Length: 115
Image (tube, rainbow, N blue to C red; front, side, top):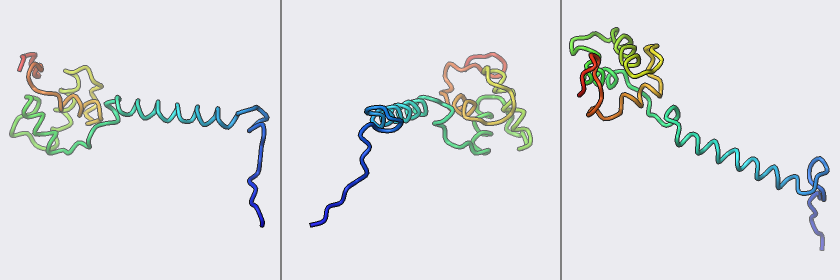
């Protein structure tokens, strides 16, 4: 009866004993670290922002007027970002959207008034 033999490296890669197990543990640790970082990083776990929803939220919070035109969205975003210590670039990035999604109660409006 024929048998099949797998290649055997008794000392693992680079001649160190148990080298492949060490790499497996290290790779697993890196993967788990990245996974945990993505779970806890607001920059990663945020739904895509839709312009209509952004506009409605900015109107609700007082950063846009109900009669504002779509081209004023960036200005409203910049005002919101500046008031909340975010980079005021007018882009609805993950940090901005996360802040926009926070509950309204206890939040300060564009004129420093508490809501």
